[in-house]
Image: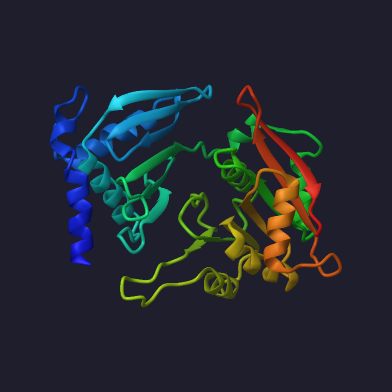
Amino acid sequence: MGFLFSQLFQRQNKSKQSLRRREGAIDSDDVDLLFSKIIKKVESENIQELYLNHEGVLSCLLAGGERSDLGIFCSANDVVELAWKLAWGAGLRLDPFSPFAGGVIKGCSVRWHAAIPPAAPDGALIVLRKQSFSADCLKSFKFENFSESDILRWQKNGTSVVFFGPTGCGKTTLLFSLLQRHFLDCRVGIVESVVELPLASASWFRLVQVCQDVAGKGGVTFDRLVAEMLRLSPQMIVLGEIRVAEAYVWSELSRSGHGGILTTFHAGSTAEARGRLFSSTGISGAEGPPIIGVQVRRDELGSYRCRCEALKP
């Protein structure tokens, strides 16, 4: 274990001195100062995402969809230290045996994800994405063949709703905006793999998956979280972003009489969402619960567009 950590630091230190001498680098060992500077940048009105690579190069995605290279921002060693700061601040593991972590930074609507060696063999990588969590954000979404009231009706009638689309399309923002506008007084139980959705009401509660330690002990799985969440008597169930592994838990929950579940899922099209969801869960047309898929996408002008379709095997 100690050897792996030493190799990680050696890899980062190889280019540390040369990078600090390059124009634009921050000559400081204070990772808190670095953290503050990066947060100020990502909170800039015109910046949508920031990317920090293994050489300390900072680039960004602007609100209009343009990408810009901001040049050297820090040393390679600072990148891995910042990744660890983000993980430890969120109470998450980030080490060579569990080299990925992500979540939402406390105190601001910024989502982060980090990767370190050996999974990122060239050095640590960090992405920070701005998230606008507000009920007013619903004005930014254009519903093409349904209305906001339809979603409320589906949920009330026990129909589960899956918001799907690619990364950064606005799935989580749409889900939270609906919850904040219509369900503040409802006892909402949220289960997530990593923390993403803010708790906007004292009536809401959240359970989050816990990884095993380096000895392979402990940890709380997604299916265990769902079972315990049901014992806490939620009036409404929200599953944070599910992947293929969690989709089976979602389907079992839907088939056991717990309808009206809201969740998000990565898929580029309705056909892809249908195929990945049902192939991983084993649901057939005869036994499948009612499910509505809401595809969320951004058009060429950056506007959010949503279209719904019944999802059937």
